[in-house]
Amino acid sequence: MASITAIMRGLLLLFVLLAVTEAALPPGYEDELYCPKGACLRHKEMPTGWVGPRSAFYECFDSASNDLSRPVAWGFQVGQEVKDDLLERGYHQAQCEAEEEAVREALEPNAETAGSQAEASCLPSAGSAYDPKAAVPKVHIAFYLWYGTPEVDGKWMHWNHKVLPHWDPATDARYKKFDWRPPEEPHSPFMPLLGTYSSRDPSVLEQQFQDLAAAGVDSAMCSWWGRKDWKGKRDDAHSGANTDELMPAVLDAAAAAKVGVSIHVEPYEGRSATTFLEDLRYIHESYGSHPGLYRDQGLPIFWLYDVSVQHSHQDLSAWSEAIASVRGTSLDAIFLCLYIGEKVGDLDDLAFVTQGGFDGAYSYFAATRFTKGSTPLNWKTIVKSFADRGKIFIPAVGPGYDDRRIRPWNKQNWRPRKQGAYYDEMWTAAIDANPAAISVTSFNEWGEATQIEAAQPYTSPNGLKHEDYLPEDPHFYIRKTKEWAQFYRSQTPSES
Image 1 (cartoon, rainbow, N blue to C red):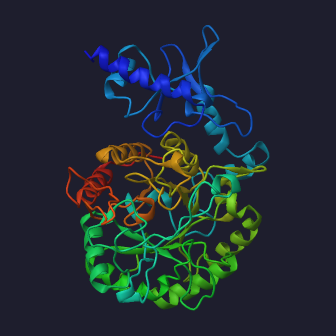
Image 2: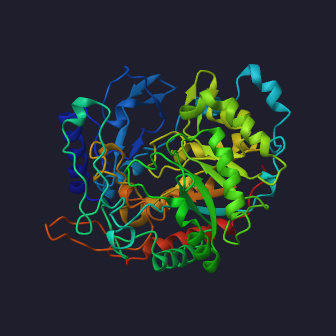
Image 3: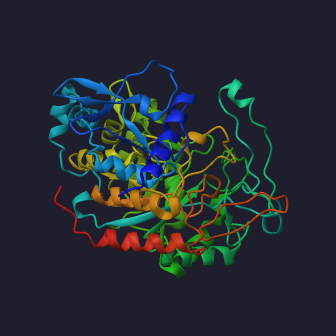
């Protein structure tokens, strides 16, 4: 039986936090919401612009009595004893049927388009050579090439990332702006086992792809910021990292390690459907025959970051025309856009994918609940809705999220690793959704602390302590990724 003292201490801590502030509580205090027996959890409408704890945006509804109550919030900081006590008393996380139906309806086409889309149900995109029904479970991982050092690149790149501004001037004014100071104090909450390395260093690439092979992934989703001769901004850090220049060495390292390379096309300055067509021709001509380029059903994969209904609804026809123009040609590929889960007018992300002729979408974000697409509770419904239209949805899993060193105002999206438990929870939900593939965010996005790459304990000369994987060893998350990837592939996909 859980200690009564421990339970009361945990509940008292939570009640004090709720009483003192109506601001969002930090991670670890309201990660899960529970309703009493006989009631179900559903969204609660709040005034536009209202800010408060997560539990204030939900309510527990008892259909028998029509009673409403506020859900009980729980997080790991409160203590496992409190959660055990809640479960013993019949509290649960089940959502109301209406809530689940709302999620389904948001993914369904409207009545005006349902008839025309019904004929396409369970069929590949028109002209697409990719067949979702023939998909074999694959694992892909976001991989970044924007790191540089004075010794190799002539300057620091990305490790000296600036503190980014907030869009609200009042909020922004609360945070000091500066560039981080590698090698002693880089922008990352963790310190790489390799130190603050250069992505241009061949020995680094060799080690990284050996680690990717050890992690059991099929492809590294290489962050690609435009052709090497492209003029314009390449990333938010303004590092000037020319990722395309590194592709020959990356592909060589990948081929040697027997890991494929897929292309993660980033929103470089001036990117459009038209420039992407030019990129597509360039990549096919430059790298299309390289053995390191990953192919699925004979097709390379292009991940199109920030191409979604939220970012690109006004360009839907341009993307549709661009993709249709290469179907059945040597430039054909698997084209995946970003899934946010938002809606612009009558157009949602699923309609954007379908009408745009994309093969599917991916969620990317490692912070659960940051978007509807990164909310594991939604994955099973999204996967099925996509499959019904011959599309694939690829959920992204990650070991945690922490970008507070470059976005100190973004504390609400911090997701602690919980010594691997957070990663386990995301993998479990992703596999349960039975997707055609799973992506991992990330191998080495150190600034957002989503990396599985090996890390070491470290404290700077000024006393700034970095996080680490203790009590586990530096390669803990590489091994864990392999274990989950092997388990995922061992599952027999169900019929769509």
